[in-house]
Length: 166
Image (cartoon, rainbow, N blue to C red; front, side, top):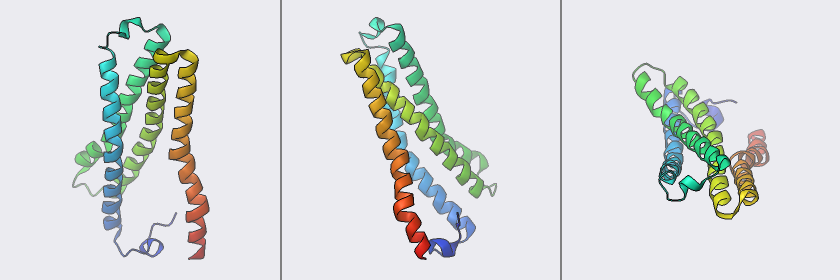
């Protein structure tokens, strides 16, 4: 993938491009982090709900797994800020951008699983195991569709043909 100024129609130095890209990654993470924080807070409160002791073994395993996935997602989404802070003034911005982008990508996969587990658990407790499995599978399909398949289709159908015309 070409990333030069002529390719993007921008006239910026590599460092300016890295600064812009890092700002874009951080903005994406701000949006995502709010959802992760809400999910994590919700999961933390569940353990103190009156019905929690009545969960069966599968529901408890789903709860703990989902809680740990939410923690991992939060860690992945906050890691770019920590990485930037640790490498501040080390002339490593392009590396920070690449690593941060990978962390965010992995974080979205982990968040998908945390969303799936949360929906599975709540629907399982509310309506039963089969409904929970169906709702969890539906959640996973929606997330994969919107977060992975849609960008892939847009890139192939809209973005790639435009690149060919330049």
